Length: 37
Image (cartoon, rainbow, N blue to C red; front, side):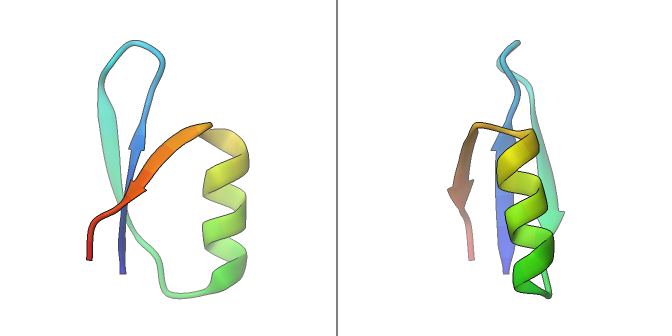
């Protein structure tokens, strides 16, 4: 699945997440994120 992590400056990065542990690591680093697909 793809996660769009939004930085405080308004820019964003797109991550391909395969494991739930990766998702938890991303959500702790980036407070704003949304699920893409």
